Image (cartoon, rainbow over all chains, first blue to last red; front, side):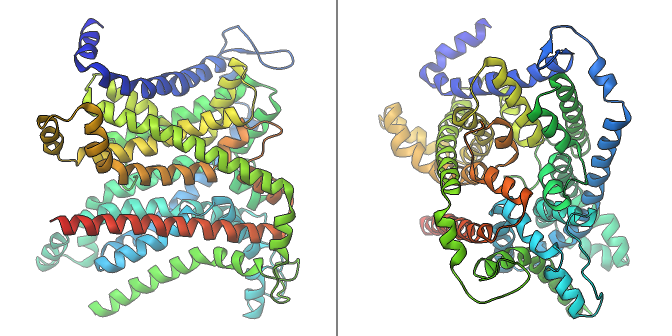
Length: 290
Length: 265
């Protein structure tokens, strides 16, 4: 403590630059997060709020089928979306890295453009596509694939498409940024030495782009657990996810400690994933972010 | 053989990009549709734009969103830039820890952040509304600016600052004449990013907004939940136009910057 003070006097007024950042980090981020953990250990109040009485009941209550099923439904959707995003996004990032630098720049702009438009508005476009007698129905009927409207809006596939659409750019950018740094001569060398195309890919390209792929998984999986508005808008009220559940319970404010426990569990999962990522890739930097 | 492979990958890129733009293009096209139904085209009309202009609720929400984005983005810019500068000048042991705490809002799902803020604000008894919105948006905007500025500071040539100091420049002179111009592009692009994030945020705003303060995304969200109004098409098109121009502007600034860099060499 003393040495810190000495340092502060040594650096003089410059240390003041740090004050707002330190204050916001401690008071507005760490404080509220700790408060939530504290809340999750409290008992539920009679009508609203909580009683100062330490208990693990909230965590036990989360084991009830109602909550467990919602949790697994969210996990399933997140895993499915992430898997499809890998399938679509990995080749995209990979092919993009092989383009000429002019095309790379153009591609980047084209990807970023919709990414920066309002996420709600992009979802709205999918309502037009999916709604009964909407663009997709009309196209399919015109092509003679179906002869009556499919009514795809408010179905599971519509939600999955919405999730992919919202999160695909993260994967593309992450894979692209690591594929771009790759030394492609290694692939040529492997091919010259007689490796098949598949062998060269699995033994050279895949390991070298792994950091990007992992970072992309983190960047898509973590938000996908919480993006409740996609399921809300494209799935109607049929698909209940952890996110919509928290939001619903929270706005009605009926059981604060229970919701806090839910958030702590989600938080712990997120931190575990980030920790795993750091372990595997030996860096805390997420590829393709900023 | 090789040529064919390139072609296939090109087709793949084009198809995915096309699918990305389909919903956006449809929104724009249908904003000019005379019919209320999004499935039939009944000719060109600016009806929905007129209706939009008449909608007082939406206008109020737009003003709220602008106030919110401008104030939280400015506050975050000051705090984030000061923090990045301070951490470089004053290498405290705790800096790393504070950095990971302040960048946490980027890493955790927004829904948790919204919840955490809601709980914290009700604890201190802050009334929900513009104040709570500004505080929470500022907190999640800080990491974007901080990381941009820090990356720029890391790549900065220290000798220029040293030279200025040796030539007798005081700390303020040093900041205004040397440091600020050098970090300005990073500050501006961070600000743009933060502005876009704040202006687009639904999840956190839904949690911390009061019953009487609507932001534009919150308003759109409630409208989309209840049903489809072609008005939203028009609104989407306008927002799209604004965002595209902002993006092109930032692109213009950054290409000018690189051009200047090339010229300097």
